[in-house]
Amino acid sequence: MPALAHALLAALKDHGAREIFGIPGDFVLPLFKVIEDSNILPNVTLSHEPAVGFAADAAARYHGGLGVAVVTYGAGAFNVVNAVAGAYAERSPVVVIAGAPGARERVSGFLLHHQARTVDTQLAVFKEITCDQAVLSDPATAAAQIARVLRSAKEMSLPVYLEFPRDMVDAEIEPVVPLSPRAANREALDECVDEILARIARAERPVIVVDVEIRRYGVEDRIAALARKLGLPLVTTFMGRGLLDRADDVVAGTYLGAAGNPEITRLVEDADLVLMLGVILSDTNFALSNRAPDPRRMILAASREVQIGHHAYRDMPLGDLIDALDQRATPRAAAPGLPRQRAVYPRGLPADGQPIAPSDIATAINDMFDRYGRMPMTSDIGDCLFTAMEIDNTALAAPGYYAGMGFGVPAGIGVAATGLRPLILVGDGAFQMTGWELGNCRRYGLDPIVVLFNNCSWEMLRVFQPESRFNDLDDWHYADIANSIGGTGERVTTRGELVAALERAVQRRGRFSLIEVMLPRGKTSDTLARFVKGFKSARERMTK
Ligand SMILES: Cc1ncc(Cc2c([C@H](C)O)sc(CCOP(=O)(O)OP(=O)(O)O)c2C)c(N)n1
Ligand SMILES: [Mg+2]
Image 1 (cartoon, helix red, strand yellow):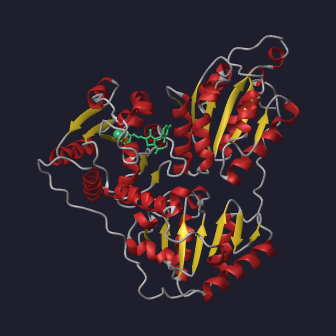
Image 2 (cartoon, helix red, strand yellow):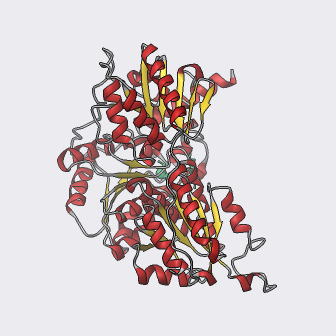
């Protein structure tokens, strides 16, 4: 019978994990030894546990498997809480494996180092931000617990928690046998699909809106095929930006309500049927809607449920639903006059001596993508994420709903660890939190390109509260520091310098490139300016 540590690592791989991110501690040193010696999964250690969580989250979003974060008891596990909370909010399947005291320590009578309130406080905290949990303290049940928890992570596309007492590493257990996924009840599925198709047939102006779950459940290509077959226009939400990046003919654009392209906004808000697939009904997706989501004209397939009007079908895996829709749908011609052409993104930045505005960065990146192909992207929260809306539709991992800072750089490292070369967008405030994780790139031969929006400001806060002096940040000269932590940094102040620095970064391989773009305080991207205007007028409407 295999030892628990080996059985767990093999099970993680069987369930779609591709790598491990972590920081060891004495409660997980024996486990880390097995991780390193067995090499069942490559192990990437970082410098601070929030980054471990962000990297595991982004890796899962990109490879479509499970993200894995291994941390020590207490101090390490509580450090990763915010990243796991963000993964929960954005439905990313991160497996948290946290060390814990062994059986004899638990009854030693001592308060143990790293212990918060009780020995089980850690489990109690993670119960709030994971969809399933297990404490692997009994060899007789450990295999079944692992199988159940890992299936939960995959089926719900949510984080899960496995507590690993340090005296259990060599415990012999049964091999972990993956549980088969739970399919939809066939009768209920057919009834649900027939109802949806009937609603589509009666609609005059139907539209499909997609969001992050279509990536989490790996159904993007099938949804693109269904949209073509049904002749329906399709848009992504703000959070869903970058989805269907291989189906340009299908995606009409990104719905941003009052802050977005008026044609896309009308397409959604004038629709008499909105088919929402994998959509999170969050404020960042819909707060700027001129028309609140209305159940009578809405079908929402998310979180393994399908809500139609005021009734719901339970246990409807999105993949089963899409396959059944495709099987039972008859091809329809696209309704005339719908925006089928791709959204237009700015191109042709003059390489001149003019100062740089945030939207110029989008234009320069679009030009670079035209020359070298689109790159997968990660972005932090801040104006960099709003600027990303002006960049061509390429794969993107960003905290568009949870909106936690610090995600961008570690997420980019996580994506790079999957074998891709990402373009990372980050503001100076967020970079101050986790940007230094770039110092780990050299050890793993990772060479992301980082575009740092340096406005020496918490600009997103300033646009809402301009009078506050605490939004003024100092200038840390990030490009200079990049050179001393294994990368190549360039500080640019003109559009010509930006174009040249991007060119050099694309050509430079084997070390990370950081382009520090100096931006004036008070100048935001065009998209953020429209968001702020939309939020302020929405707030005025609410206070009337
Ligand atoms: C972990 C964390 N702390 C605080 C915040 C609040 C917050 C923002 C959101 C609203 O909650 S935007 C922002 C400033 C971001 O500054 P920077 O990275 O330099 O980007 P930019 O200058 O483009 O704004 C803060 C502090 C947050 N979202 N996440
Ligand atoms: Mg800033």
